[in-house]
Image (cartoon, rainbow, N blue to C red; front, side, top):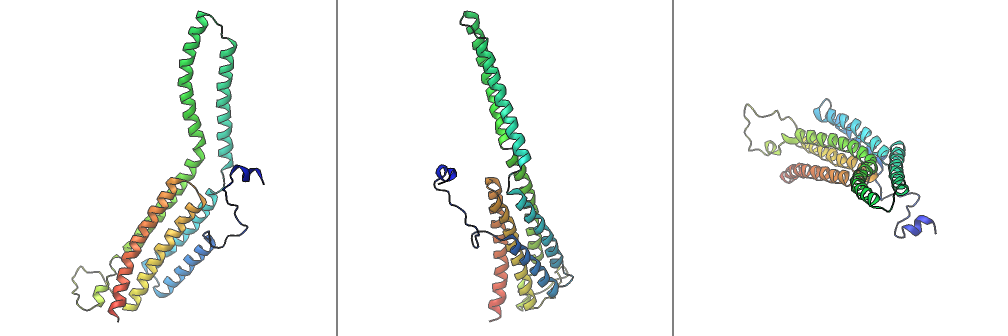
Length: 251
């Protein structure tokens, strides 16, 4: 039994290779590349194809960042640890000086009371400084992850805008166009594939975001990832309502 096993008796030892308990980033990226090829082959020079190309670049950047944010940032951690030791050492030195110059007389007790009041204020500031130093690495990682998640959230809204005007009603017969109506040239099959591609892109967007939750244990990042997943699920649900209308009307 190792020391860590004794210290954390309920900690599960990770196996050498976990096949189905972790997201494989390389497989997610390959799926995105395949989706881009499928869209470009079926809808060449379309806006959705260009969005997927940009999404592929963003996915590679996000995956690389999520991988970097997993291990500790040792320069920041060592600097914070050294600074915390210096602060604690400074407090110990001040206490040693106070004890060495203390005398059991009226003047010494008076100075002790004044020093105690000042020491309480200093300890408060010391606690705040230690809290800042301990969480400095976490805040650096959190800021980088939230910026990447914001970009993933933005591209999800762009995908949703591309499917917004893809209304299956114009294929069902009773539909009167106006001069301001958007141009609709897709067939029933093409529209189904277009909507399905949008749904796939939203699902992959949430899976790229989940890489940050897999590599980090920050509650703020986890909450942001969950919010993004909820957002993409809601958008995909609207898309699948349109696909179901097309499927039911074809029967």
